[in-house]
Length: 495
Image (cartoon, rainbow, N blue to C red; front, side, top):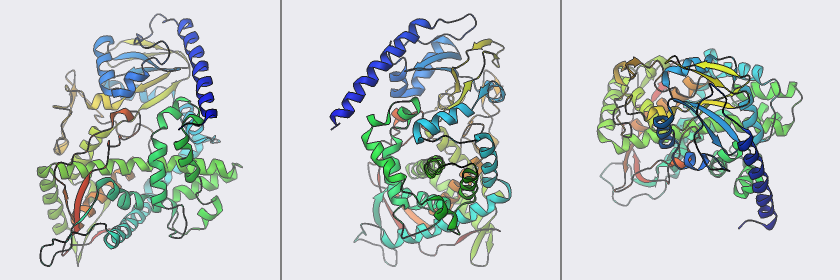
């Protein structure tokens, strides 16, 4: 139950936002050459339709208004470019700037301002690429192995009915299992491992789950006081170790080390540093979310599971060195079925916005040769999920097809090949290769170490109300059974 003070704040905020939105609505007039504006509610515009199911709303709007149109989400105007062939032009337009977007997210969601953000992003981006990538990937693989060992020791609900000479079956939630394995590994890879500190992966995961539900509201500028559960979760998240304690850890990630030292050099506060660390954790949280969907999709589709295991078993046999199978990053990336499963899982679960701030009035030309005037101060966006569910591009787009991306398959729109059909992670993500390698290694290792099966009638569903998040969560966890396999071949990374 909300406190009286919170209700008063809610009423005041609602009145102010109504006055502001109504006044700007009446004052804003569509200028010649600007995209059509989708009709919406007088106060919240198209926010309700977007929140209910963004993909359906944007696809319906495309049919009515064309590939380029403007929507209003409460107090923000957003021009949507629903054309995959315009992805490169939108990404490279100098007047479409990401910097104000990251500032908006940093302040509205995590309450800090990052000084000299462009240089910071450039410097820290190096720590998840190039020569740093192998070290980070090795650390992740080691932490994942520890997570598996811990899971095997503490697995819940052992079954009483076991086949002779087999490990016992255990029952758990699939998402809970993924949190205890890949999220635990990611968390400890980022921050280093300190088993005695209360800021551990279990506590952080629980609170991230609560906090992340309000992410879209915070991003749009709603007062945090309206979301007391999220604020309580945030209070727990900022109990992370101080900067010097993190730097003293021998296994803390290069990213955190570089970011913390950079922010200290610029005189930023402990609160700023913790806010930035939470941004990075938020990004990695989506790696966990995608890994969950990939694993779920394999368990729901026996043919996909069977074909992937066939590919993995052949690769393991080919890469045997002594008692272990040793893989390079290139070996992992060349596994065609594995790559397709991850890409298809991303296509199905993606909720990410690729959004930029319009710095100046800009005449933008689409791939079809049409020119639109983009208004200074608005946002412009491509929303990949609406393209991912386009039946002209992807046959039966609401169905998971494990081999959809096999053999370098091409995809078309209006008779032309789409250069970037997934537009995965947006155009500015320096760590996308690292994230994909983590997910692929997770699938390889978890499927070769554990037998898994969904319990009868269990089926994960997408929580479409969270469109706008990077990866959609499920509506609820689902029950599954797992057990360790006998005679597991250890997987190792080549140095």
